[in-house]
Image 1 (cartoon, helix red, strand yellow):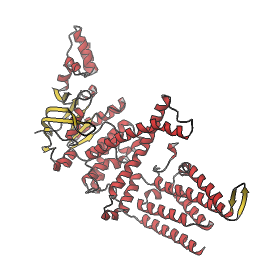
Image 2 (cartoon, helix red, strand yellow; image 1 turned 60 degrees about the horizontal axis):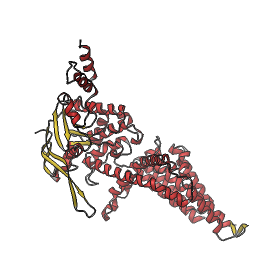
Image 3 (cartoon, one colour; image 1 turned 120 degrees about the vertical axis):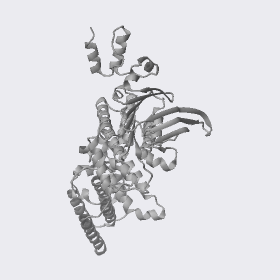
Image 4 (cartoon, each protein chain N blue to C red; image 1 turned 90 degrees about the vertical axis):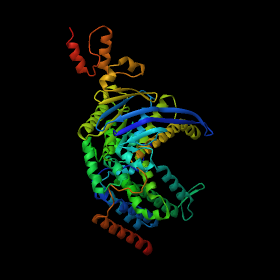
Length: 266
Length: 283
C-alpha cells in the first residue's frame, strides 16, 4: 500500500530530461501546474496533454511508474469528481432523486479529474528524472536570494534531501514492524475506522522511536564528517546552465505563451 | 607524541531525573593513558559498556573529556577551534551502515565530507574517484545506497571518510550488523588502507578474529585499559580474557584446552594454520 507512492523515487535512465538542470525542471513543473489551472477549454487541455505526452516520451521512464503515483490519490480524485458532478448548479442532464447531474457539473468534474491526474503525473516526472539531491540543490540555488531575508535555504534543502533518502528505509522499517506485530497477533485489517486507527498505535510508537534513533545517529555521522551548515561549503556538482537548458527554457516560454494566448483568445 | 594520545582521560555521563537535577554520575572512561603511533593498526576490545565506544567518540571530538586531555595529531580535542581539524584528521565509521550515509547516490555521499571542508569542485571529484577505487566500489558509484549490501554500504562509508584525507580512521564496531561475507570485505578493505595508504586504523570490535592481524591490542573494562600488547601476548592469557567476559580466537581456545589436558602445545597460537602445524608435530 505505502510502496505505491512514487513521489520522491528516482528512476535512473539516460535521457535529455535526466540531464536537464534541476532549476529548469522545477520552473517547468511549476509553469505546467499553473497552466493546468488556467485551462478551461478543450483545446488548452489538448495542448497540455500533448506537452505531457512528449515529455513522458523523452523521459524514457516507463509509463506505469507515473500511473503508480496516481493510485495514491484515487480517493481524492473520486471525491472531487463526485462533488463537482452533483453539486454544480446549471442545466440538468440526469436527475436521480435529489441528486442531479448538470452539464456544467460534468464539464467541471472531467476537467478537475484531468487536472489532478496531470498534476500528479507532471510532478512525478520531475521527481522520477531528478535525483533528490539534484532537486534540493536546484531549490537551494533557485531560492538562494531568500538568504538575504534570513531564510535558512541551505538547511531546508538539506532536511528535504535527508527526508527523501530515508523514505525507503522507513517504509521498509514500517513493513518489518507491521510483520512483527502481525506475528504477535496484531490485527490491522478488520474492524471499523476507530479500531483500525487504534491498531496503528503499536505500529507508530516503535516507528517513531526508531526514527528518532536514526536521526540521532545521522546527526552524529554528519558532524563527524565536519558538517557545520551551509557556510563555507563547496559543491561536488555545482549547477551550471548548458545549451540544452536554454533551449528548454525557450520551449517552456513558447508553451506558456501559447497557453496564455489561448486563454485570452478563447 | 603519537597520532592519538590521551593523558588521564576521564569521561562522565550525567544522569538527570525529571526535574533536570543530576541524579547519578556514570564514569564511562576512567583514567585512560594511551599513545598510538602513526601508521599502526590498533584494535580495541571490550564487552558492552566497557567504554570503548565512548573512547572512540573522543578521538573524533564528538565528545570532549570531563577530565584529562586528548590529543589528535598534537591538537587538543577540547579546544573548539580545533574541532574541525580533529574531525578531518581522524575520520569515523559507525556501526549502523544505514544511519551514516547522507547522500542518495554513492558518489554524492563520498563527496559529502570534502564538500563540508570547502574543497574545490575539481579536487572533490579526484578525491571521490580515488577513495571509491581504494575500497573497490567504483562500479557502484551511480547506485543508490539503499540497494547495496551491508558490507558494501560500510565500504562506501569508509570511502566517505578517506575522501577527507584523514591520517587516522576510527571504526566503531563497523561489522557488528554485517553477515560473515560483509565482515570479511570490510576488514580486508581496512587492512589494505592501512598497508597501502599508511593510514592509522583504530578498530573497535568484539569479534576476536578481526583482531589477530592488528599491531597492538587494547582491552578495556569498566572504563579502564586493563590489558595491552600484541594479539599474541593478549590471547595467550586465556584465563584473564575469560575473566573479562571476552572470547579468544577459536584456534587459541583449542590450544588452551589441549594444554589443560596435558598436551605440550604452544599457548600463543592464533590461526588455524598455526594450530594444524603444531598439532601435526606432536608425537
